[in-house]
Length: 162
Image (tube, rainbow, N blue to C red):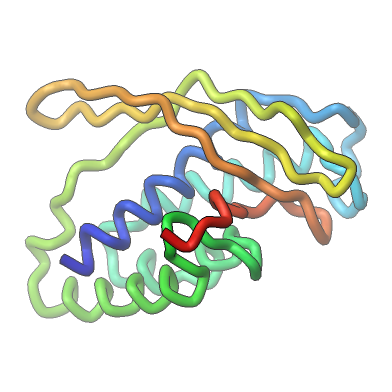
């Protein structure tokens, strides 16, 4: 069950990474240390997140600090806070080291991503399509919030406790 919870939380996060590769921000400079969103910071976030997703079937991927850093400190989505996502990932890593078959959950792909409605505080809406193509192809539209802070995009979640 912990794997399912972590996958759900990560699925929300995964959308953002891929989505950001397909999007440009309103500020198109290439300064990734800027206090406003840039194309370079979008590319950097997407690359880090995609690398993290690819590593989720391994112990090191599940405990990666790079992955956890992709979540804003105040991330909360459907009741999961950043600390809970991090704890679930650590528990999944332990379970994976005991039973490697746990790494065989289906991976998802994200397409058709857009970032819109960015506020003056750099909170934006991300919309993308999540597709799982294991036995049959299933696609759903996903929407969540991202925030740009300290020169990076980070997952903000829906900010709801349930």
